[in-house]
Length: 167
Image 1 (cartoon, rainbow, N blue to C red):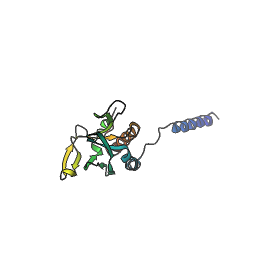
Image 2 (cartoon, helix red, strand yellow):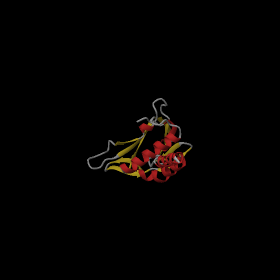
Image 3 (spheres, rainbow, N blue to C red):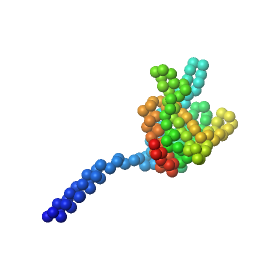
Image 4 (cartoon, rainbow, N blue to C red):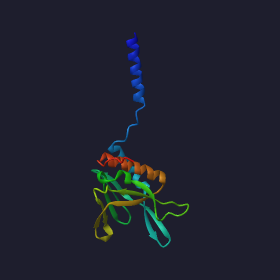
């Protein structure tokens, strides 16, 4: 009888421990779908004018073969190989254009220093001039949405082979 009770207790403890496991993380396909559907509304591009900053959205935000790409209204196409990202370097940072009461936040994507510049920026307004850079920034509409996009890009980068940041 003691053996049966002991076995029952072990099974019950096992079920409780299973129920306390961390929630399931999104798959790469789920992360890609969220980035492509929700990301364009989160990102915005800043154009400076004589009346101040003018904001517009990015377009064509896609993730193909672990590369995140988008185009902004300045006709600049950005292509980020997610496996090269410094996951800890995917952050929101205040913009130089921030003013009291109107904080503009920038999404910063940075490659690992050991990799070097692998982010491609092609300026279609300058006959397709391409530059390789190690950092790219875009504005985000709100801090809450920006934080969600940061989390999604970090998740995608890890699933694409970027080492997880220890901090």
